[in-house]
Amino acid sequence: MVQITVKLFATLRNNRFKVDVREYPEGTTVLQVAEDLEIPEEELAITMVNGILLDVKHVLQDGDTLALFPPVGGG
Image (cartoon, rainbow, N blue to C red):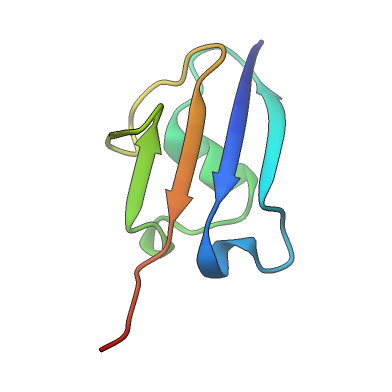
């Protein structure tokens, strides 16, 4: 098992949390964490691991901090 700090931003926090520490099996990807949180891939605009912009296929390591951002609108 690996321990991941998950940070959610903007609308992804709705009915969820702001920051949580969660455990996942080794080999878990960013997308698998999103799916576990019932966040569809199309709702992910930015995925960062330890402050680095990475793909949803990135495999998370013990102690990583994952930040998930939705598309941002405005003008």
